[in-house]
Length: 429
Image 1 (tube, helix red, strand yellow):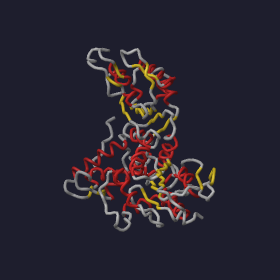
Image 2 (tube, helix red, strand yellow; image 1 turned 90 degrees about the vertical axis):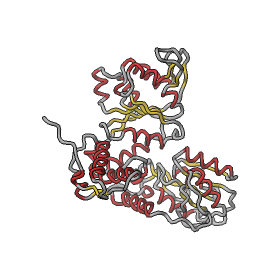
Image 3 (tube, helix red, strand yellow; image 1 turned 30 degrees about the vertical axis):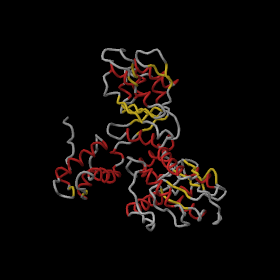
Image 4 (tube, one colour; image 1 turned 60 degrees about the horizontal axis):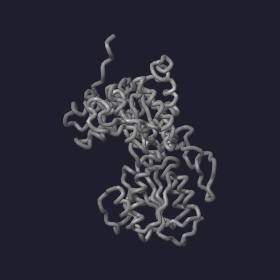
């Protein structure tokens, strides 16, 4: 058991997968003369706490490897003399209160840009929404067959203090915390786990899925959970730019390289240096340009149009398509070598018709977004039943549009009824 009388020296550990947030907190705390250490995940935080007196731990609301609530309980028991705060400023475990809590809260407010709160006030009470989220996360882990809590799984290693570290990032209940990724069906839990597995690496990712399934949301999640999260996330839709301009848009161009090039311009690849380039609808890229794209993927070098100089860049590529690229490559309509270079780590997004259990959660998500600019509406049981009988050829995007239309048809009613739900008719045969 950790001793309660450790001598502290203004030492704080930041545990978050968000590198940008850690940097902002580090800047603020360093200015207040704190000794700041950082951890990307829960296992790394455990390792850094062992044998090193720490006055406070600032813990993010989710971590890519361990379930936060259970981790907080374990750490609170093992280190009762350490202040344990969530990064939004709420205490996560009762224990010794740091005499410099006001400085920690000041740093959190500064990093998050939140308004001032009286630091002499009593400890904030977690909101009902936070409590419900915690209960739901625990329930998912407990009731799903074969999906036990992270800290009770078989492990590859154990810390000297007995906290178990999972063999992989395999906590299904944490999937609800991925921004933009909504749903608790088995398919979505598996997708969330896959995102966490690939995010820390530099492997090229190919996201495959039907139109409207949310491929860009998945790409953003991979970037956000990666060490590149503080760097740019640059998006280019290969189907939205004329073929004649696509090369210049990707690689940039010099002044006078072609008609209309009145000044030099940095391309999307170079703009993503250090970060992630998301190429949507990669199947629409012309064959001639694919060879140049392959060269960039192989050696990290680009040439602006009209320039002889070679520029080296460090960019992770995530591509997406609704087409069967492997079949197109076999038929000669897409370069097979480029396909294999893109599909180092393929991911398939399930269509909405295969995860109808998520419609209720998705509907609540979209209604909450619409409620930011107009009175919040709810969904009646009849309306939900009607939504669950549709096959959703337009997937999640179609669901969002159906709910927006239903909200307009409901006029001033706070509840969407079954008659407000207007679904696409089957195509005429």
